[in-house]
Length: 186
Image (cartoon, rainbow, N blue to C red; front, side, top):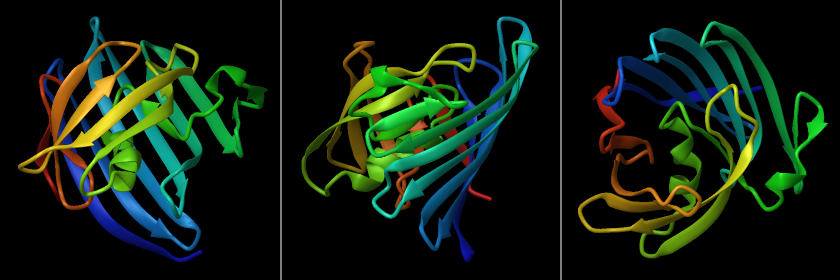
């Protein structure tokens, strides 16, 4: 397998103490994100490692999330084949139509829809959302709209959340208002 590191980013959390470092790698069969998120929530620390694999069109094919969250061990293997999603081998029929995984503890997984977003226009997408590692995956319908000045308007249907994301040339979010900002690109 041939791998080529395309970019590395480091974010600082704005809503809590925490950070996340992520590396984007090109593979023979697509793309891979490898990240390390560390953050404090409700008085306890979480340390989560994630690997997300995508096909050549930036659709999620699998994800592994491991580590500790709220003093509990996390070991999730998410697989996406065709229209079917599984978590640790258990079917997830509620995710029908989802293309991406959205890991709620990192801005890294916004990369996949942002890479598919046209230079001009709007794109709706359904994601398999891991709100936090203790929750089951659930569908998250999102809309990304390219705006002026390197901004992308983001809207989540289920939560009603809306904001403007700043995005770099690789497609990584550099500013996620009130949640994350780029600390540096190592």
